[in-house]
Length: 114
Image (cartoon, rainbow, N blue to C red; front, side):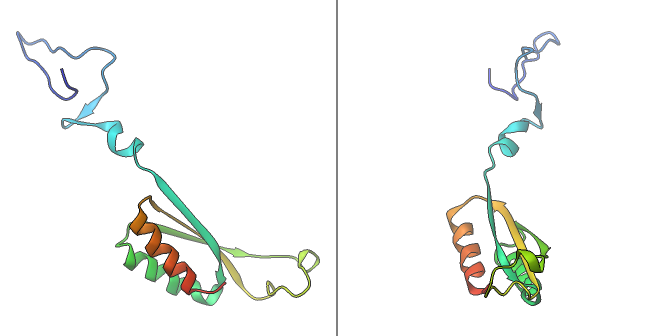
């Protein structure tokens, strides 16, 4: 007997205690547990983070989550010649793993210099 199918002979069902729970005839764990997530991150100027976020959301049709954090580095921790005295943001993009989605996001991220 497949999960989601029930036999109603004399009011009893053939579902065994070890069978997976079902909802509406589909497996609960099938969709959520099999989803593979992809993470992409980088550093970008603070003035460009809003435009990049908007472009990623539009290009992926709201299938990506973009989160950004402000980078604060003390003067003692900075290396000579680096440009972290400017306002920078660290961004993390989370989306479902697929080759097309990854290519789109990587192209967009490459177009914004950090």
